[in-house]
Structure formats: structure tokens, C-alpha cells
Length: 80
Image (cartoon, rainbow, N blue to C red):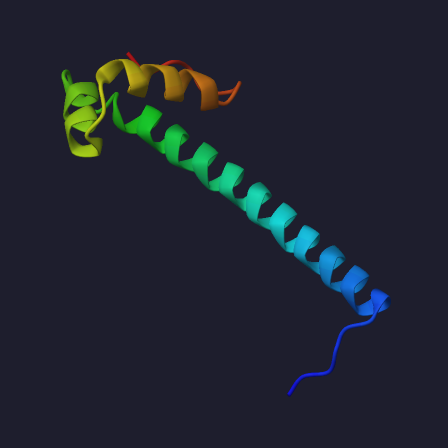
């Protein structure tokens, strides 16, 4: 049987969980940004690619447009 926690152990555990949660949120945002920037690049491959991407992701073209605009990096030109 594990020992009963004291206040110090609880505080330490809460701090560790908070750090893990923060790392998770940071990584999630980084991955989401990378994903939509890649989609932005891919939609310029050929005419109609945006619709094909929307079909592959099972979303509307408008969702592709909104997300790619949201996550587009400042250095990258808009995909046509």
C-alpha cells in the first residue's frame, strides 16, 4: 500500500501536473501550426487541391481557408 500524501507531496504533484499540462498545450499548438502550414503549402500543388484536401480531412473548403489563414506564417505568401 502506498503511503498517505502530506501537503508537500500534494503541492509537488500539483506542480508537476501543471508543468505536464503546459508542455502538452505548447506541443499541441506547435503541432497544429505545423499541420496547417503544411496544408497551406499543399493546397497550391494543383488547381482543385483545396477541395481534395477538404475531402480527405472530411471538412468544408471554408474550414481549410480559415485554418490556413489563421496559422499562415508571416514569411509565407498565400497559396492560390
